[in-house]
Length: 394
Ligand code: LMR
View 1 (cartoon, helix red, strand yellow):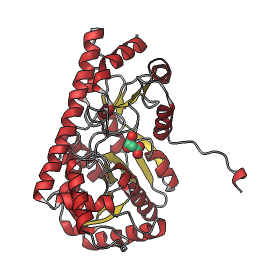
View 2: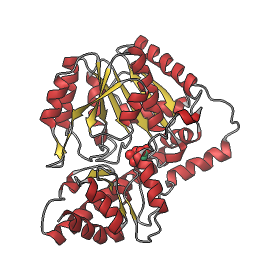
View 3: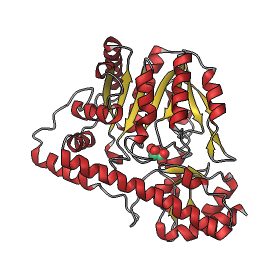
């Protein structure tokens, strides 16, 4: 049977990671996958996570099934963290899912059931997995204008003009904060305008929230999604705890539906549960339980907030350091946009040829579209990176 198929393309992020791991050069630099690295180049287990894990290890009494909708304490704690009081709790329903991707998957299935011929709009560009996920779910993906490669900023007027032309059959996928891959984000005022546009056209908002707290702060990063939650009759949100709790491999996420009333939320809940059961039956619990413990313990929560702040500040510091190093060496402000961006990534605006040359000549690995993971920059190699970038762009 399998010979009837062809080899499927590898996801470009994981393909790059494999290439990087196979490179034997000792001065290689990995700016590919979105994983935070500390100043020693490690992706550490957060101290709050270790403490919660220890508590779970000491106190847990069973590994029996938890149920299709997953760890309720985890989902409720994330609902509070994300939405705060922006929407009446009776309108929110949630299921735990394996990471942000698993959450997006569950929600796309529900959209497909509700709008079998609906279109979904994703930002140009977007996280490389959004497009194939929509396709696999049977939804037709389209792009709305987003990033201006010339200025390194959001092309907001074009984006808004596109959104203004949508209808009730359309779904708009928005990055809650820390846009991936560009690092260019909407201002609060622009979020307000997006909310007004969606309200006017009836297009359905779907927020992907994978980096809460890594941009400007846990509260500040929630501005846009809370604006939507408080103004739109319905919406969806996929939350990931992979980055902000450093739980990558544990796969902890939540799929949220906000309905116009409690009945609509209950229907959405049953639909999500039905998708989960037929897809993978139940989500894994360990990562979710860690998050539940942290968010429900005053001291651990405070410690975690401090750890998120540390990551955020380090990423900002690395942005400044890289932009300064390039400016000092080149006497040009061409890469100053790196400081204006926020979150884990920036899109540098290099050609594919330049990206390949950087890999070949300098062992610097970034995605084909020149997305770099700022959170992965080794500080001691910033000068080396700046020299290589200047050389390649001259
Ligand atoms: C990334 O964009 O690098 C991360 O979100 C990791 C992933 O799953 O793609």
